[in-house]
Length: 228
Image 1 (cartoon, one colour):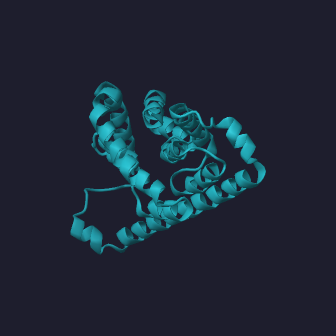
Image 2 (cartoon, rainbow, N blue to C red):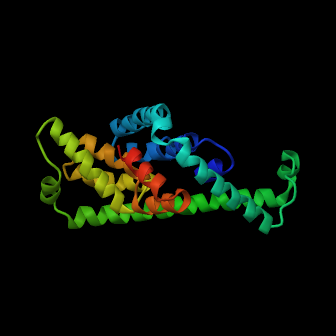
Image 3 (spheres, one colour):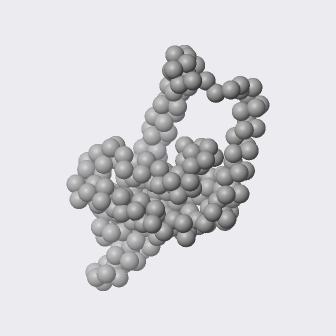
């Protein structure tokens, strides 16, 4: 959806803000956080999410200059127009006509079912991987990987390592909360767990999608910005 908004003329930063908000500020994420980790984690998610959005909107023009985003937008727009032409689309219908069309509601239902299917797979993968981590990885190993009892340095090191684990975990959004619970049980700091949860937009599959949609240069910047 973020890519489609960008292709249709939305500012790149606006499209990324939409993606960040729709991933980190959704009701089901808060509910799963409360159930598996407790209300402090849900509070951190819903306080940190808007702060991340504010920082992205504030520094976005420097991080994603128009000279990089405009050519990508033109390419995506041309691709969308070509697909519309291939589909034999005519002039756009009015909103009232589209709402009365059974095809419109069928498409909406298809998108809704696809979202539910994606969420189900995310949760399943997240719980399976988290269960394997809890059963196969001893707490002593987590304590070796994640620095303990070193004050602020513990939080910094835990956050950096948590980002690396998030990238290779292949799980994003709601699905990674189960893995975050396994990390919390293993002794990872509060800041490290929150960093892992917030890193759900830089998992390896998503990085490959960014590269396919926006090209390697923008994908690298997205990884760097979202990783910070």
